[in-house]
Amino acid sequence: MSVSMQARQPTLRWALGALLASAFVVALGYGIVLPVLPTMVERLGGSTDPTFNARQIGFLTAAYVAAPVGAAFLWGKWSDLIGRRPVLVVGLIGFAVTLVASALAPSLLVLYAGRILNGGFAAAVGPTALAFIADAKGEDDRRTRAFGWMSMASIAGFLIGPMLGGLASELNFDFGVAVAPSQAAPFLLASGLAVAAALGVWFALPRKLLPGPSAEASKRGSSMFVPGEIRLLALAAVAAAGLGAFEVGLTLRNVELAMGPAALGLMFATCSVVMFAVQGLVFSPLVKPAAARLLVAPAFLVMAIGLAVIPTIAGFSEMLFAVSIVAASAGVISPLLAYWVSRISTRNQGVELGIQSAAVSLGLSVGSAASGLLFGFPGLEGAAFFAAAAVMGLAVIASLKLPLPPSHKAESFVVSRRSASK
Image (cartoon, rainbow, N blue to C red; front, top):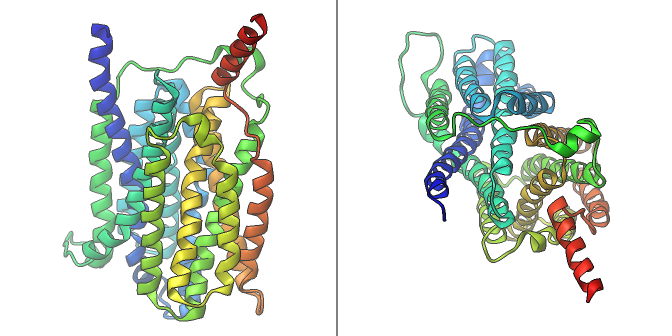
């Protein structure tokens, strides 16, 4: 190993650590405010009507999730132009500032604006961080594991966020402003962590790293899709739609069965733990990238089965098992599709992963909205799960033969030529 490579490896390790911390903080910043949103909406909206408050909480969540649909592509494109590090730093600082603005919101309208901007700045982190990993030179299995670690960091943030938010809401800050301290504390804590993550990115990522345009992309044009790319993006959107329908449907199904918030919290915690464990296995050295690619279709099938049986289950233990099945399959699909989109594309990684992130956000928004609408019709409470299961079944067929990245195609061609020469 050369001296330059030995000097470069510690730098990349620190950079990956900063990227994982950024993904964790953004996910935590989303989940940490959930425990105080009901109280905040009730105070700012001036209403004690449960239907009105529940609707506003749903709209606030949708506003945060929908913001990356347009913003993720722009962040990715800018990271290709000016570099990964400045975009990540701006995204994290903007995330921190908009969290503070949300904490100090004097009205429901300002809170909506804060959450939209919060989601928009959060959209800078995911695709840009993944683009940095995709740019890094190295073996495919290392890049695959890094993609999996990014997803696991996000899942850890989602898992810890609500619990930390509940604890932070007990803290008492007095800034002399007209906002309840118990509501402001989770926002302010997440904001401070985002600033710390921004500092970590600034010092850990290489300063002079500007991705160059792909030679193939310059020949074909940046607007062209390679064969199979649209299918991968569509599958990513479909998987996200199924996950969105599952999350909203599980919440409403819990209300229907009168299981209580504690049971719902345990189910979502179980989802996060199962996803974390499954991704730790799939993205370990035990599973090669080419083999991991073959897991997408079976994962879609398992997800379809899990979604289909949830409306027929009333017991808590059985429900927990079905929820674990859906969570395990979703935990396999999402990071694998993100990895293969980045490998098959001839575009710059920032643009490509921005498009992929926008597709995921769109699917998540559509799935969540559709599930809520279907649950609103009497007698169709289970239709959301059945519809999502049917769509996942179609995705099984579409994912049977995923396209290989260019490097694997080249390797297959060389092997076939050698075989023919013999």
